[in-house]
Length: 100
Image 1 (cartoon, one colour):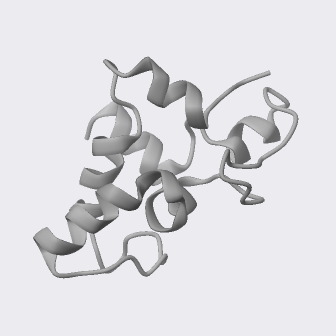
Image 2: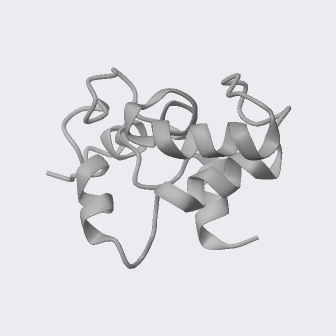
């Protein structure tokens, strides 16, 4: 298992909810306005990943159900990799994980 998958599965990554717990950020809000930015929100609900979710639904004939991947398995992690911590896309990181 790689670093990004561990972050997704554990919730211990650059998520508003996790960072605010340790007072690295002042709140847990997602940039889209949702109260809690966590892996499930980012992958299943956040408008930021709408395109990636659509591609995944077409590829796998499934849709997000928000139950922490118990029915999806690896496709959720694939989606997380596609849009979340792409090391070559600093703007992507800053858009959803601004720290204060």
